Amino acid sequence: MPRTDNDTWDLATSVGVTATMVAAARAIATNADNPPIEDRFAEPLVRAVGVEFFTRWVSGDLSAADVDHEDSTWKLEHMPDAMAARTRFFDSFFHDATDAGIRQAVILASGLDARAYRLAWPADLTLFEIDQPEVIEFKAATLAGLGVTPRADLRTVAIDLRNDWPKALREAGFDASRPTAWIAEGLFGYLPPEAQDRLLDNVTALSAGGSRLACEAVPETPDRDRERAREMMRVAAAKWREHGLDLEFADLGFEGERNDVEAYLQGLGWRTTGTPMSQLLTEIGLAAIPQTNDSVSVADTIYYTSILGG
Image 1 (cartoon, rainbow, N blue to C red):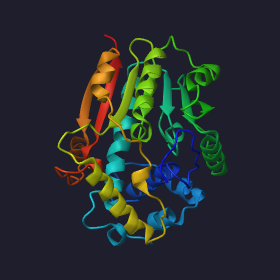
Image 2: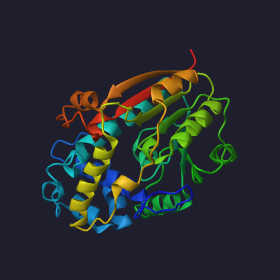
Image 3: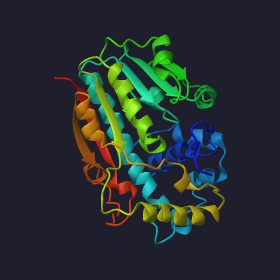
């Protein structure tokens, strides 16, 4: 079912399923013989959500080779490496930001992100996580049940990003006069184009000079066929549906022309550097993910690091 402006979901339905899929990929990467990342909370969170397709995948009872369509550019088998590279990118971003003296951080649409619990944060750092109330409550309760506590001063902000989240963030103690490290991981594709711009406008308005932002986006490429990309996603989803995952991934995003993220941020005063997924994979010794000239895959994603002002 296509997205609407006021739709709702949890971690087992609609766009919420993508957070569970990403956590499952992190769990598999963590459990590899030579793990590129360490996220011991990913697997218990996936199991707690209870989507059988993903619990079977993290258990090894479901093989990506059996569920992926050979002609699709969207393959489950690519997810663990891709999400490991993505996780390392955002982890490193926070490490570099705190090394530079930043002591306030915000995770936008935090989903099943467990960085508050697994990264070594400075003792005087305040970390804000923003997501829908049901997601915040579920994650907090599940991790508390594991007997773990955040390793930072964690302030959860239970609000949909389509609502007045800047006001809610301030009410949670956010100080716009202090430099902030922001991340928007796996978010832009699930926002309408105008909402993507509005989010970046709000982040900028809340950011003091020297603030940092890490985000990701698939750049607009004229020679790519959008309908073919959607068809490849439908082909992949049809194959996954045969094994129990009843979700049409092609309907989770929003259509429309988008502003280029790098150019838009530069227009707002951010100095931005982009790194392609292929480089992130190479840097940690993982194999390349195939790319094509006429469609879009996870391999086309660009990861951006930005600094405001200066």
